[in-house]
Image 1 (cartoon, protein in one colour):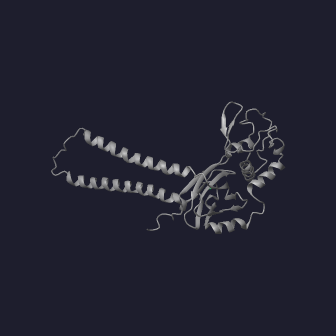
Image 2 (cartoon, protein in one colour):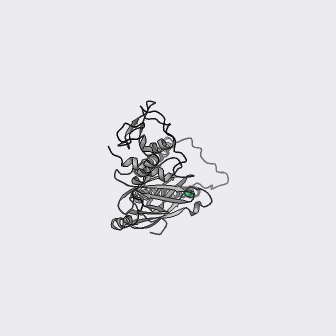
Image 3 (tube, rainbow, N blue to C red):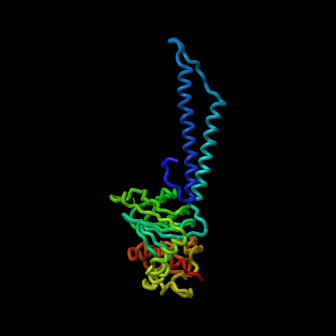
Length: 306
Ligand code: CUA
C-alpha cells in the first residue's frame, strides 16, 4: 500500500477508511463510465454526411426511472453507512478512560484524572477506550489525530467529546484543524500510545498535586462552596452528593441532566438554571477561576457519591 493514507492506529480508522474507499470506488466507477460513454457515443453517432440531422427523441420512461432510482439507492447506502460511522464516533462505550483537554492559543493542555498534566503531548494506553472532554480558553480550535481518524471542534464556553481506542503503540501526530490565529500551524502535538504496563509506570511517574478530584475538593473548600453545598442537605445550596448524571428538577418546571456542561454553567452563571426549592443566591465565579480549575471542580462533583 503506498503511503497515501495516514497510518491506521485506532478501531475507528478501519471503519472510516472502508467508507472512504467505497466513496472513492463509486466516484471512480462513474467517472470512467461517463467519460467512456461520451467517447463511445461521440464516435458512434458522429456526423457521417454534411446534411445529416439527428433523430429527435422525447423522453424514455424506463431510462428516467433508472437514472433516478439507482443514484437514490447508492446515496442511501452512503447515508446509512456514514450515519452508522458517525454514531459510533459520537457514542463512546460506557467504560472509558476520561481525559480533559483545554485548547488555548496555541497549545493543547491535557489533564488526567490522577492529576498528571501535559502540554502538547498525550499519553494513553493501547486497547482502551479513551474519551476526551474538551473545551477552549479562547477561540475555536479543533483536535485532529489522523492516525485515529478522529476530529472534533473544541469550543470556548462548552464541552465537546470525542473518543478513540488506539490499536497499536507508537507516536501519532495531533493537529489543530481550525484556523485559530497566527500560530495555528504550530498548535501541534503528539499522542503517545503505550502498552498498559508502560502506561501505569508513566502514570505513577508524576502527580505531585494528587488527583484532579482532590484538587477540586481543595478548591471547593478554598472558595467556600462548602458552606452552602453541605453534605447533610441542610445547606442553602443543593446537595452535590450523587448529583452527577442525575436529572435535576428546576424552579421553572423544566428538568436538566447534571452533566459537565450543567455544572460548568452553574458555577459561571448560577442563576441561569436554579434547582427547584432553592433561592438564586449563589455568586458567579466567572473570571475568578480558570478552565482547569473548573474541570477540577467538575471532577470533584463527579467523585461525590451519596
Ligand atoms: Cu488552535 Cu488552530
